[in-house]
Amino acid sequence: MVALRYIALAVFAACAHGAEDKAISEIPSLTEQTTRGLHTNTGHIIFQSITEPTPTSSANELSTLESDSEIASSTPSPSPFEQARQSDGECMASGVEDWDRELQIGGVFIILVLSFVGAMLPVMGKYVNWLRNMRRVFVVGKFFGAGVILATSFVHMMGAAIETLGDSCLDGWLGGFESWPALLAMIALLAMHLMEHTMGRRIARSALSASAESTQSGHGASTPCVDDLPLKETPSRLESHEPSHAHAVYGHMDEHRKRLSTYVLELGIALHSIIVGVTLAVTGGTAFKTLLTAISFHQFFEGMALGTRVAALTFNRRPFLICMLNASIFALTTPLGQVIGIAVRESFAPRAPSSLLAMGVLDALSAGILLYSAVANLLVEEFAAFEFHQASRKMRIVCFAAMYAGCAAMSVIGKWA
Image (tube, rainbow, N blue to C red; front, side, top):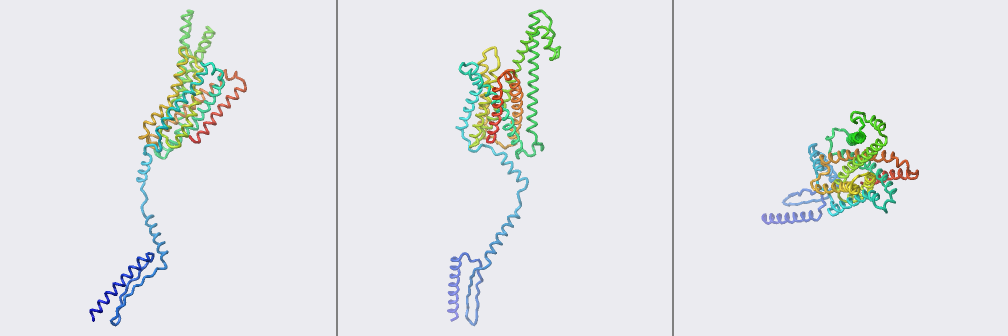
């Protein structure tokens, strides 16, 4: 009997366990299970299993979330060294996203054609009969281009230099001095002025020395050596000796001065055009199309301003070929920068300190060069020219309006490029 009693007890316990497991699997949301008790009383064994949901389950879940947040908050934040490593990784990232090779190559030829056409139109207007009637159009285009160059120096180049040299990846590289772009632009402007003054001084002395030698050989008269006289005293000596010859010398000096200022203008434009080309080549996505449109507009009217200055020069031999050579040099500078950018785009890290320093410094120097070229070689010289003052009042107003329109147009474009 005792054996049968224990066998019945085992069967009953097994059935109770099975029912409990089934209840747990069917109600997974139950949060607490009570202990199972085994009670004996006068030879009877009662197995009891109670499983009830706890009314405080939501409170328990909230406390669990709070404990998890406390654990997360207790996790130590990245150290300054780890943050520096993450920042270095972002700054040293190379390559250009969404870069289209075919579109980039097409952009090279678009810029090349528009630059050459803009620079050659005024030159062709000097040598082609049916374009000579459009002389006033080219003059207005020259003043419009002067405004474009002026706005480029302030809005585009200086703005780009400030943004580049103020990048967070250059923290600690510039000594906390925030005016580097303006300082570099001023240095470039003063360097251009010194270079033009020095070269102009040499040209003037060379022309006066040649005049003195020709006067001595032609008339046997004694003319003081130019190097022995102050430059301001030389003209009066020459005028007292032979006024007509002195007038020819002044004309020769003025032509050399115009040629020098034109070449200085072309040099400044060429330097910044190379930088612009590199920037365009390492730009991808929709920003490339916007920048390509802005640069195309800029290059065309900048070329027109330069071409008008070149067409006004006088050359003794093959003037058309020389003018075409100057236009070709201008047209090739931006595509040259694009080719350089395409070649280095895979290894180019736009936010690396070396890249930021190079681009920022060149942008600032280009801003100073273009500012000097626009003000000294275009605005001051063109508006002070005798031909400008001889023009009608209506024509002068149109020229001023064209310059202001060029500044406004390039400034508006600066919002997107």
